[in-house]
Length: 508
Image (cartoon, rainbow, N blue to C red):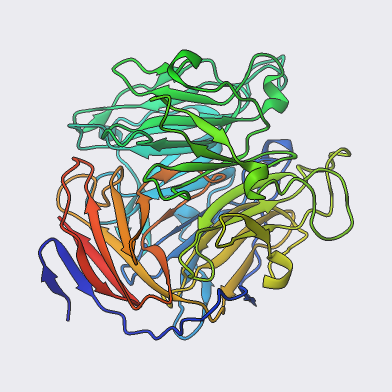
């Protein structure tokens, strides 16, 4: 039975997991699912995301996969001993034109909702329980138009019951001179009491393909980082960081922001160095960039560590195609539960771009004890040659091992079960009363043998899809750990001792 210790409710899942003397080589097994394909014309060259979230209350995450010109599909999670998904899509979710989706509890009623990005009209769908949804009513005030939405993030700003929502739009479909130099704006929806008013347009827009609200400075305020696709903005474009002041503004080089341009596809964020600040991994055409936060300048400054850490992943590592890679979704996660975060990157040609690799297998970069990363996707069994797009690196059956789902353009979606005989683990859930039930903007800190893993709770990033639910921590050989929660209002729990290999629910 669950029991309360201070601010923690411990729900023990007594699943055994054998620790290894040396970090285990990850191994995945293919899972058969009902075929699902992300397809469509040039407006669906980008996108193809998947949302992973529990919509029926059993703590097992469902998958909602974008279909582009095809209907989107909801895969219900039926996992028991192994990973099992059943395609079961209610009519309200079987939308066409879907680029991607992100789960979050917008109205804080205990049911996860969906922000659905589309070529057309975006949709906010209210969760009703048992994986039923309906559009939020007109009194909710969310107004959108005919856009090409390709990025999303959300955060709770101080004093608001509803989240601030950011939609990144790609090319202005109404611009007769498009697509080149026709990038659309980022749309920012700030709540007005219990509803939303018209969005603010953040300009300039440089064809956003990923964005993430992050409290990068640990001050209690999240700012908006945007990764942009240089292929369309041509002149003057770069990555962006918006200071979320009363009137949002771009950070400047004088404040520490380093102007940086790439064909940005996806953002992943995680404290890899152990200093408590979030580092970032950016996918692109060619080099994939790993940047380490630098607190020295006192502003939003990240230093490139791509070559030092071995994370370039700039050309295919198998298949013999020597042209540059095209990276899309990026995700941090401890795949073999050795206590060190690894990196997954989905890859695939945009369509038939002759200067980019056609045989471009997905990447799995395993972190070594010295902080460098080594390519391992072939040995792990996940080096797919499909044109991959969005992905979810999530524990699908709560056995303490991160599984994988990958949406492919013009090819069947792939699901892989992690069967690695890895280290010990914890799965952490956050449930709090009132608004912002999942404590977006808060931080979890896990202490093992004197080393602290810091995890910021965010919604956004990746490529056109994200995860809401249990957070996975690898413990290596440690049989116990200590956990504390720093809530969005910056109050914190005491360090709480926990045994390995269980599900832990934090409450406030």
